[in-house]
Image (tube, rainbow, N blue to C red; front, top):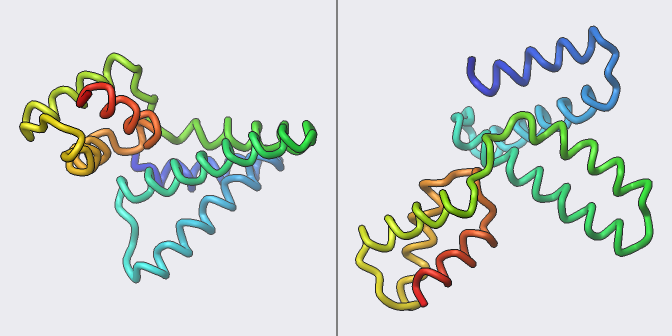
Amino acid sequence: MSLREKLDQDLKEAMKGREKERLSVLRMVRSEIKNQEIRDRRPLDESALLTLLARSAKQRRDSIDQFRKGGREDLAAQETRELEILLDYLPKPLTDDELRKVVEKTVTRIGAISMKEMGTVMKQVMAEVGGRADGKRVQQMVREVLS
């Protein structure tokens, strides 16, 4: 079953089960998908859907940090629950060891030897890991491997 089909099926189940919070998050995701398809003027493929979901999850994480800094635990808790729902649709994140292997393999394949090639390495690694690793983690790992 594709990600889009899973989202649609879960939306229907949330409607039937009267799960307000889950329904709200899934409707928001579908809205973001539709808006992106309108901007791109084509349907999104599986990797684009994962990218969109990862971006949405990152926005939730940033919001949680900001709400906690502002002393708004109620809003941080709401964002945390929404993030948990989104994480159900994202692939399992890579461990540090798995990410290091991908970075080292990419560095070897490209033949990068200095920080000057960091952009090239980052581009290749991000394409390979997709939504399974945060860009900041990848950048940190690439810096460690290249230095």
